[in-house]
Image (cartoon, rainbow, N blue to C red):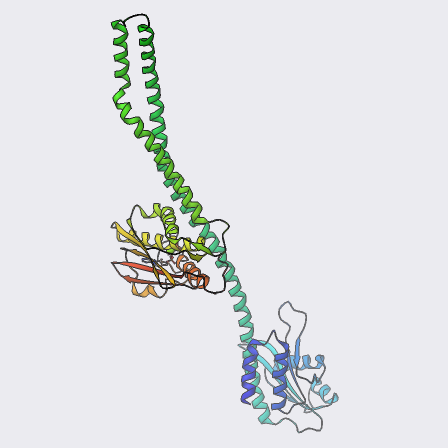
Length: 443
Ligand SMILES: Nc1ncnc2c1ncn2[C@@H]1O[C@H](COP(=O)(O)OP(=O)(O)OP(=O)(O)O)[C@@H](O)[C@H]1O
Ligand SMILES: [Mg+2]
């Protein structure tokens, strides 16, 4: 009987596997010494008809089983027969079944179907003990069916949740890209501004110099045929004064330098962006992580500069085999989190980025002097959607994605130390050579 209990429990996972249901019914047949065991389930909403299951012996006709199921469900009590009473029980006798038990399957007032046990004429009829034991098994079957239905519902809900999560990740990525793009636009704006100012200054200076050159020309023409007259020299002195020649001599080279510097900053930002996104490189390749950190710091500059000074403590790193675009996203999230944590304190702070080699690994640390992580949040910070930030500032996916990239994608680890009120250090450890972990196509 214990086996049967176990078997009915396992029905839970069996709805999609008819063989297994059949073997459960087969076992029930042995346990009750029945010639046939039938499981009949009422039509599901929207479905065509009853669902029947049986062991190796199909036994009675489906129509008869269905009629008996209806009868047992109407009475909400097991039927035992045939003892000279209603129609379907008579039919059973006519078909050669001398004894049968029909258990209605009802759970929380919802009618599911029936479980029935059949013995041929000539066999010992089912006893009242069989009736009691059968009722227990039927109750378990009903529960197992309910669980299976719940299980299916849960699976469907989980699928929906997965889809919703994927949608959110995409939206969040777009939003994050939008925020970063705004930051970078701002970054590019500053050098553009001083390139524009310098060029404008150079333009004005050029017209002033032209005026001066005009005056010199006049002087040259005037002196071509003899000494210059006082009026022309006077005019020249006035032109030099108007042009402020000394000032121009000093300022023009500076303006050129400023313009060139601005252009080089813009070029750097463009290069950093390009290196950061690494378009098209989804496979692992040996990468210079110090350089990657530099470009990520540039991308995060706009988030960091108002709240913190950045200190670099870079060690010598060998090329690390990784999907650089994904690792850059990890660094970016750690830097932005650090900036936010310092922002929380209302004081200007410091972000220290350290790198070093440790055996076969490299270790990258991002330390901040921010608010720290309170005890109650520590277990949850890597959970998807755990965030303490207001809407629009964070969605709680940064660290979840970071962990999946580092651990699942690269066989590394990500840990942290934190002291509330003092700050937090996140530590990413990556193997230098890619370990054979299932290559996850990160989204
Ligand atoms: N350096 C840090 N200092 C203090 N708290 C942190 C730090 N990094 C993460 N946290 C905490 O962990 C939570 C989860 O971080 P995570 O990066 O996963 O999400 P988020 O920053 O809130 O949102 P998202 O990264 O999706 O924009 C944060 O909301 C914050 O409470
Ligand atoms: Mg974050």
